Image (cartoon, rainbow, N blue to C red; front, side, top):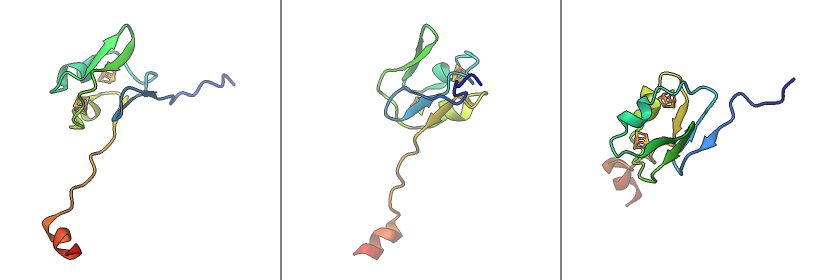
Length: 84
Ligand code: SF4
Ligand code: SF4
């Protein structure tokens, strides 16, 4: 057994996690990000610290190599009423 974790995760920033073993280096994530948060330094994904948690990189990565922490849900008007 090699002991290498095939699902090893790389923390790119506070919201984005990257699984390099799954990445095929297509750069879709880099091009689709609306705030130019993602880029590659050599073969390593790096962040500009501007992520707005839109999820596009995760949804469009063909290899499921990006995970984005979901935005916390805003309480609805109804639930706000309930706490009054
Ligand atoms: S979209 Fe996915 S497979 Fe393509 S470069 Fe980004 S992380 Fe890698
Ligand atoms: S979640 Fe959206 S803003 Fe954040 S890195 Fe991915 S595409 Fe860019």
